[in-house]
Image 1 (cartoon, helix red, strand yellow):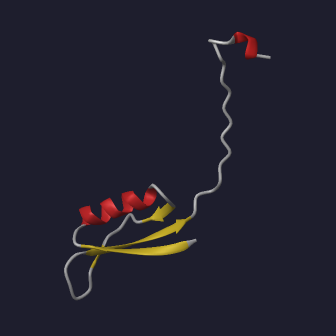
Image 2: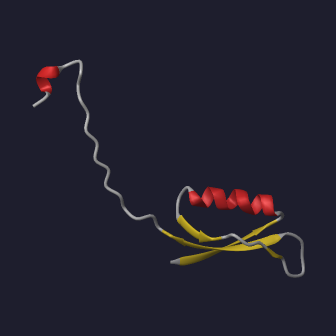
Length: 70
């Protein structure tokens, strides 16, 4: 598990950055924004980790070539 700090100009901007990170990493936290110390904007903290490897199995039926079905 690793931590990421997002420093943004607004809550909406921080949410947009978090939404982009969620597409790549598994994310926990990030449900609270904190005001920036000595400045404008917000910061939030995320706990992240690499996504777990998944195995996907699919089964297809060839309706155009039934002779291929076993």
